[in-house]
Length: 290
Image 1 (spheres, helix red, strand yellow):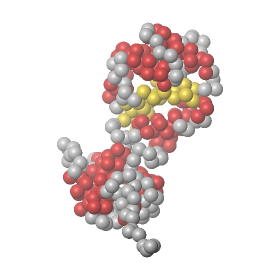
Image 2: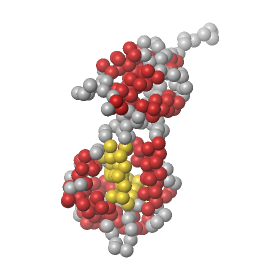
Image 3: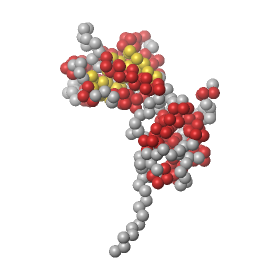
Image 4: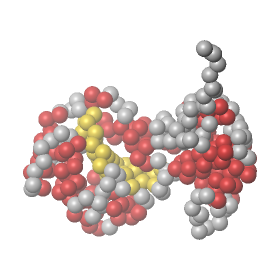
């Protein structure tokens, strides 16, 4: 019997159009599973988040869509010893007030109840019984969509006994418009309880380049798939917003692979840009030139 076999084509890395043999990668870059890239500002916020979790309380993380608010909080909540935190992540804030409490109870493995007062009491007693050694953390995403009654309920959840401090660490995560809601008189009691409001900015040009390199290193290559002029164009197109960088860079790699090339060119990037939804404003406008 002949020992010769038909050559097996390289296995896809995650998308059929990304070829391991061309790019020298072993994993797919620009995905949600890549370890978080922290620029200087995010490094500083990470330290502040750790401090808040030590003392407990409310914090707001806000910013434009795609700037990595949820990813940042996932990373921040994963830093302490897993035995010292209990985390409930609520990704959708358009619940009615009772539904949000029931979701929190389920994530903390508590029995649900019908009455809101019973739900609040169950959560508060759970936090008290955990003691100082274990910190219950609530991460509530898309908080700008939350109705007023639910927002007020969060404030009440943080109240328990006059002589005790904060029972929970509560991260309110959402768009910049949530900060405007906090300025309303009706939200003054909640605003006074928020001890930190952190704004996540898009990356600047330098950190956009480092962000792309970070993803390529995760994928297993040190090759210059994106020459400096291409990275500059990606920055101009995306304004340094991480989600947009991911989308555009991965699309450019797919067009590069389709051409059996090993380096992204302007032609490949042009094709990627044409296939993405266009913004109304001038895409080549550079805010750093203002």
